Image 1 (tube, rainbow, N blue to C red):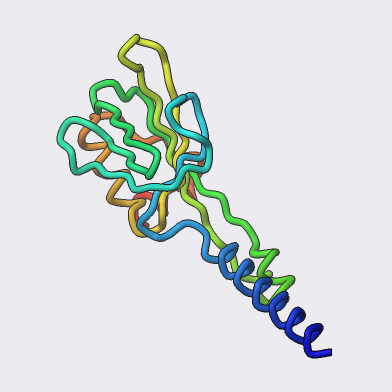
Image 2: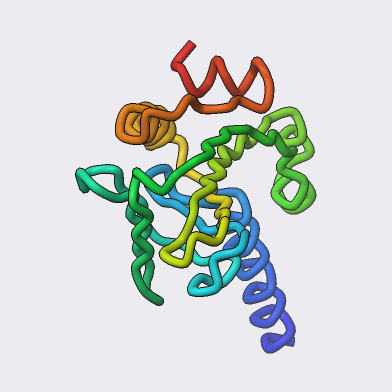
Amino acid sequence: MRSIKKETGTVIALVFVFAFATWAGLGSKKTEYVGGTISSLQQGTEGVSSTQDEKSFVFESKSGKLSIPYDRINDLEYGQKAGRRLGLALTISPWLLLSHKRKHFLTVGYTDENDKQQAGVFELGKDIVRVTLASLQARTGKKIDYQDEEARKSGLGG
């Protein structure tokens, strides 16, 4: 009987840990490579991005570093996706269905060293969205294409 209670307690604890991890998502200052044509990165690779370098946009993860020269970037697009926290709502509280988790996506189009067009889609943490967009626009001289008016407001801080 004790074993069953212990196992049940362990299962409940694991459900809460899993639900919290699902709810937490990407850290507010992190970046995740979602996908694209960049063969040196695997989809779902989490790391940090930076526009601090004067010559390149940099994405670093445990598996390596990607550096995209600003003068090779030819397309920048920003969009959002709001999703309901279904997993967390099912395990903890249905009230969480009323809250939204907004995801921020940056698409960077560029030509590589072989003059082939490449593209990468990155999910940006909420605390780095505006700085990253403003810096990329200033360093590349390219305007950001916003997917919709809501993305424009968020990206511009409005």
